[in-house]
Length: 186
Image (cartoon, rainbow, N blue to C red; front, side):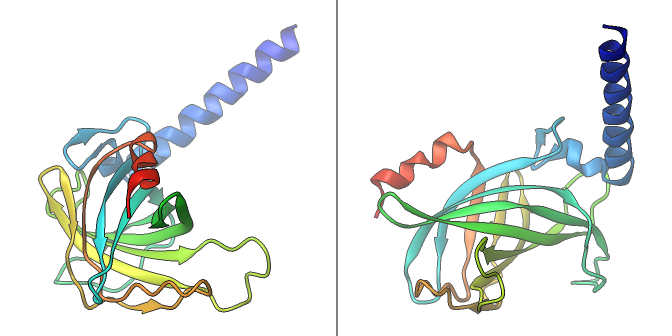
């Protein structure tokens, strides 16, 4: 029994040190998009509009991560890497899972005034060396909404035929359950 208690105490200490390190390096993660985020992540959804006029419901989940770009954008220095996942609804009841990576520019204590750049990459488990579809989004926070409205971002066709080019989207806070609306859309 003592061994289990010791193990629990050690795990609690390790978790506290890890949490403290993330908060020290990325204090913005405690308050994302005007919301208190003590679990250090944000989720949101919106309707993505591609260059060809097609629209797709999009759900994103992101958190601080390593691997920030080293390039400055609009005079803002890269502050933090971003990681996470996303889902795009391509047809009623059909979603495509995406890996999210990116960079936050500017901002340190909060996301106010920061610029967010995401790359949403087709999630591949089997044969990840094949051509992988992706698209980029970039923009900033306007109050509680993440407005990704810079339409001249890159993209590459997905093997499924999905092509998302020069896309824009306004994301508002939402949970994964809210994205169940994909079943009734399109």
